[in-house]
Picture (cartoon, rainbow over the protein chains, first blue to last red):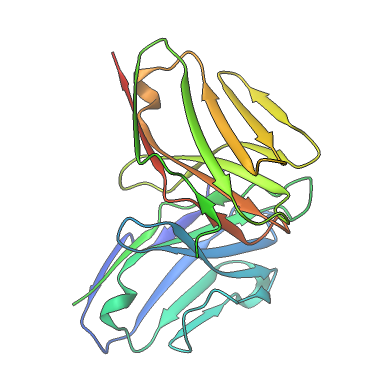
Length: 116
Length: 111
């Protein structure tokens, strides 16, 4: 079974530019999450999709970040315009579902974003 | 304010001995807990989970203990192997969806 995949693995952009990150979850996982880790600190929640619907976007830093999951399959996270503080590693994770069974989240390898 | 804390940034253990990684949390609503292992330049790899209805969960060499009254969980690895050297994160959630992570503990297993 294929794991969570993310593209690109690295992205270097200039301040003010736009970047789009992509995540393909594990097949059959309705729940998809985005997280970010900045400068070796803790991994922070950004948002949660159930199929194509945003369940919780309380962790999104500001309106420069836009996440979509059209058709309930892969998801994209767009940063526009990018700022220096957006640099970090963006992780995507997926799970079968919240609750006692199936809440374990499986992470992708991450996209390292550097804004210069 | 961090709701999940891993107060030991690093830990060194001899091969074959027990590794004990600790994690404390502040939110009494947390009911779901995960441990992840992370190698450099890779994503976190799920290791083991526990929900609040249990106080112990075991999977091979890995055992997680949960003490809800103390808001503390720990991961025991026995026997430790050099391949276990990695950064370990604990994570906690109230709803099984939004997880709060600690800052990680770097484990080095010395051959």
